[in-house]
Structure formats: structure tokens, C-alpha cells
Amino acid sequence: MSESPAPPPQREAMEFDVVIVGAGPAGLAAAIRLRQLADETGRDISVCVVEKASEVGAHTLSGAILDPRGLDELIPDWRSLDTPVQTQVSEERLLFLGARSSFTWPHALLPPAMRNDGNYIISLGNLCRWLAGTAESMGAAVFPGFAATELLTDGDRVSGVATGDMGLAADGSRGPAWQPGVELRGTFTLLAEGCRGSLGKQAIRQFGLDRDCEHQTYGLGLKELWQVAPERHQPGLVLHSAGWPLPGDTYGGAFLYHLEDRQVAVGFVVGLDYSNPHLSPFGEFQRFKTHPAIRPTFEGGQRIAYGARALNEGGPQSLPRLVFPGGALLGCDAGTLNVPRLKGTHTAIKSGMCAAEAAARALADGTVDCAAYDTEFRASWAYRELFRGRNVRPGFRYGRFWGTVLAGIDQILLRGRAPWTLRHGKPDHASLEDAASARPITYPKPDGEITFDRLTNVAFSGTNHEEGQPCHLQLADSDVPLSVNLARYDGPEQRYCPAGVYEFVVEQGERQLRINAPNCLHCKACDIKDPTQNITWVPPQGGEGPRYPNM
Image (cartoon, rainbow, N blue to C red; front, side):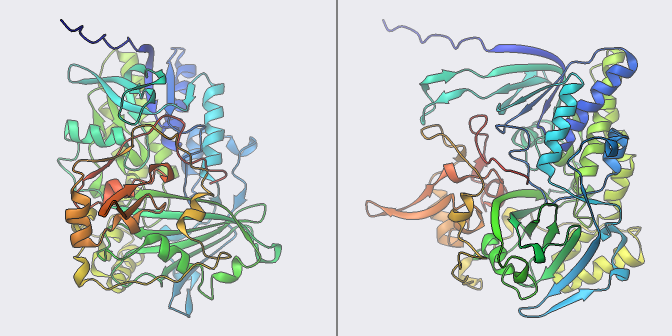
């Protein structure tokens, strides 16, 4: 008689009042506010923050321009502290680009939402590192290097999270260095994983949080950090652009932000509702840098970092219910980015503060419901700001020209107070047309000085994944990439991925999809854009992925 398999070992468990997943601005703001409230009330509130990156900030990527309103509320004296917020916006320009021409929009006619008076150009990763240190100094536990992979439940209520096992073999079996995950149990679990968070996605589906809202829509942001020649550097300069090289039916734009130390952040955003399967967001980004109005900034300079990240663009009409039994969605896990303002750090901080205050009251009252968070966030200045910008992104369904006209009417004439709310079109994954009817796009060969290929750029992301572990890019049906994606759409995954993870190869005489998972930047574009939703991104082992410096 065969022996029954040994039962799995008991996972170590740790108990907290509040468990927070994600050490971004929303999660860290929640941790700080909880500890502030503990100090103010004299009632201890135990808080832990679990972060999948090897260190706080290593997976954090944004433009970024900081509206200090959220930080002012969270830490009123931050200006007197040694913060990484140094470079105030000194000048801003909006360029409309043709293939060789450019037109500067008069600053006096900029919509109020796009003005950056009193704002700062920052590295969001460095701000999060500073916020994490602040949270720890106040008594919160911050655990980087642990990927939360499972929602724990007690009946129909979320009771915490479990981190993934370490040291699994490629087939999912236990390798020689296997270590079980850890259970982090809490009265409340706050999900602040960023855009398209894996546990947030699960909670939305499990609890039907999106029943009363529109689907979310996304953009893909690509970013390089450069150190430029001294004569090319203008600290505090903010430059945004629209137009070339994107076609008129594709939403997107670009930015150049001049930080301190001769550093310039250059980024490019493409709406993932684009229709042409031949389009490559990375290829468009590299072409953008060759424009006569843009290229001189980088001549004589050096690219020092690269990364990519999806971002929420749906606005308040795509905001799900923010609370579920035992927890809540914070920041970009919910979708609090303000698209016309091109920023979301301040709204993420506010969402974290609102969630913390609701959770602290519930703990004090001995209740298990933090539903007040949803109500209070929707009554806050952050939601009112999102609501005023709600019609900008969906207006670009009608193309760049009409989208710009509609945005001007909505933001300049009506100041976001239109008596209507525009709807989004198809979900991003359903927007591709057949490759046979789409316009082919040929991208120029990179010059190795201003423009680069994807694999060269990936080397500047610091990304690393241990070989031999289960692939964290999971296919529901291994036949779909060939029978649908390649046959109908010419394999769009080989172009929308900004890291060259997906490629179609011929091996042993047969065409197949190769997944180069070690290249992955955790941007989530594949999870969003795959036309049949056949690809699911799940966290790899904790601590793996990009290692962004100063991004």
C-alpha cells in the first residue's frame, strides 16, 4: 500500500491590526497615518507593509511631478526635513509635434489642470524610500523582498495575505532551497500594489467591486533617465508633448522633466486601447527622441536607467467600490490617477490617509467594517479633482483632433463642470483590429546613442529573476498565442511588451511562443492588452524584478 503524501508544513503566521500590501505612496501614507493616529489616541495600532521589490522604491516608476497637497496633509513639516523633494517646477512648455515641426502652446492658455505652479519634479522611488523610513521610525514594520501572492480568508472575509513560497522548481515542486511563505494576518488588509495589482484584481473579481462602474482603461508608460550635458540642463523645466510620432487615432504623449544633478527624465505614454497590432510603444518612444525639438537635449548625454509601467486612465467612472469585507483598495490598485493632470501621487496619498482613518476608527469601535473609507474618499478633494477631469481621456476615443477640442471645451471653458460624463469605448484587450487590415509600421534601426533596442535598454533596468522557478507569466491556453494572436493579430505581444519578453521562434521545425520571463519589468501590459486575456501576470519570487535607481 502506497504511503499518503506528507501534509504541507504549517506556515509561520504573524498578527497585525492592519496589513498593507505595497510600499508605494498610498500604502506608506496609510502606514504613517495609522501610526500617527496611534500616537494621537494612545491606542497602539500594529501595522506591517509587505513589498515585493528587493527594497522599497526598486519597483517604483513614475514621471514624476508631485503636487504637494497630499504630502502637506500627511506630514505638514516635510519641507523642514531632509526629504528627496528638491526641484521645484520653474518653467513649463507644451509642444505639439509634427514629423519635423513643433508648435509651443501659449502658457497662458494651458488648462488649469496642466499647470504646475508650486509643484516639484521628483523621483517617486526616492520619495517612497523616504516615506518608508518615516513609517519605520514611527513603529510600522516594513518588509521588502516578500511578494504577497494569496488573499487569506476567514469565511467570506479577507483576514490577511500569504507571501509566496521561495525556492520552487520550474514545475512548481519544491527545490532544495525551498522555503514556505509566511501568513500576515490582520483585522484589515489594505491593497496598495499599484496599477493592475494581482491581489487587487482578485479582490475586485471575488467581491464584484466593479459591478457599478465602467471597465478600467490603461496606458503604458516607458521612461529613461539621462544625465545630460551641462549646457542642455535646465533644472525645474517641465516639457510635455503631443502628436508625432503617434498616429492621430492613438492616445498618448511624452514628457521631459529636468531634475537636479544634470538628470532628465524622458517618458512616453501610449494608451493601451490602440487598435493597430503592428504598433510598438517602445518603437514609438525611441522615434520620439529623434525629433528636432527633442534630440538636442540628449546629445552628449548618457542614458543611466530604463523602465516601464502600466497606469490607470479610466478616471472616476472606472473607480470600483473601494472596500470589501476585511479590507480596501488604495491608490492605483483602485485607479486614482488624474489623467489630465498627469499625476497621481497626491491622490494616492489621500486615499491612503482616508483608508487609515476609517480603519483606525473601526479598530477603536471594535467593528469589522471600514466602509466609511469609500464614502470619505468620494467626499474628499482628491475625488472632486478626479471628477473634474473625468471627460478628458474618453474624449480621445474620437481621435487626437476631436479629443483635443473636447478636452479644451471641458477643461478651459467648462472647468470640468460639464453636466455629462463621457463613457469609455471597448476594453483595451478588445480594441485591436486584424493585422491584415492594419497599416504596417516600420521602425528605424537604433543608433546606439540616442535610440536603443529593447534588450539593451532592459540591461539598464536592473531586472533580475532567478532561473529555474515557475514562470510568472501564465498562459490559460498554450495554443492561443499561435491559433489566435499570431494568426489574426500578427503576435502583438512581441511588440507591446517593452522588454522583449515574448517572441515567436521556430524550434524543431515548429513555430512557437517563447517567454523570456527573466526580462520582465512587471509593467503588466501583457495582462492588460492580450486580446483573449490568455496571459495572467502573477508575482515571481519576492525580491525579483526591476531594481530601479532614482526612478
